Structure formats: C-alpha cells, structure tokens
Length: 109
Image (cartoon, rainbow, N blue to C red; front, side):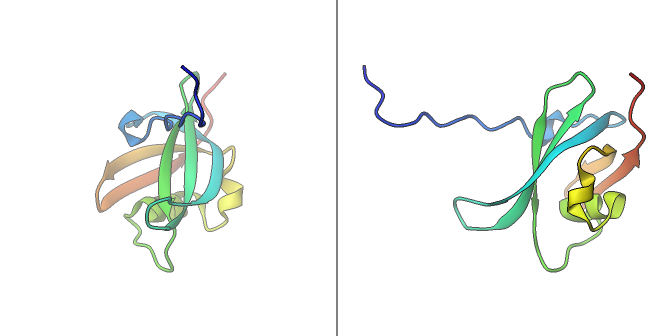
C-alpha cells in the first residue's frame, strides 16, 4: 500500500490532563487560527515537572471575563502573553465559567 498524502498528527492531550494542586510550566504559547470557523487564539502548551506536555486553546476576543480560559491566565500572568513562557501556574478550578489559575514558584529540582 502506498500512502499518497501526509498522515494527520494526533493533537497533544488537552484539559483532561489537568490535576489541581500540580505546578505546570508554560513551555510554549503560539497564536493560531482554527481550521473550521477561523477563530483566532493561542495554543498554550503546559508541562508538569517530569510529565508529558498538554495543550489548552485560549480564544482571543476584544473583552474576556476573568473566569474564562483566557481571562484566568491574564489575571494570573498578566497582559504580556510573550512573558508567560517559562512561568509556572497551578489550576485552582477549571470548570466552565469558573476558571481560576494562580502563578506558582517552580518546583524544586
């Protein structure tokens, strides 16, 4: 059998990987546009010490609520998304319309 087209890649695991009380490092944050409806956002890649990376999409809008996905990260890490790289966060709650993230110090090596 000959493969004629590139095989699609499976996405990174997502929000189902979140564990409350665990510290996660922001290892990547890239802007993207969704394939289906053309929404703009950021793909945030997080990783616990010694863990596997996972991705969370943060949708970009003119105004976001403090308890939205994007809002929770803006409250915790500030408006300069480029400064998020290498910082550590903890999820306090990650329920729809009730999301809270706090900045953490890096875990000891």
